[in-house]
Length: 97
Image: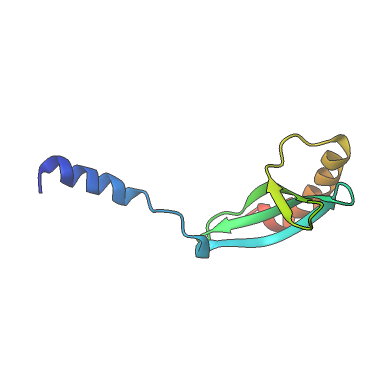
């Protein structure tokens, strides 16, 4: 193996690929935006590292009953106020570690 190939293999080994089995949801809550739309917020830890806040996805129920997921995007004032109240509880309990 050439030294260039060895260097590439060494660099690649520094970055592990994502393993969904190491992703754990510590706590989550859902804000009912409307009858068909929901916003999920959760605290997630990967490989037992420090917990992080995840905002989203938004879930939208289609007319055919299928649920579509999309990014949270921008938050409304009501969603933001709900999130602030949630964080007041979650920060000391789950995120201050």
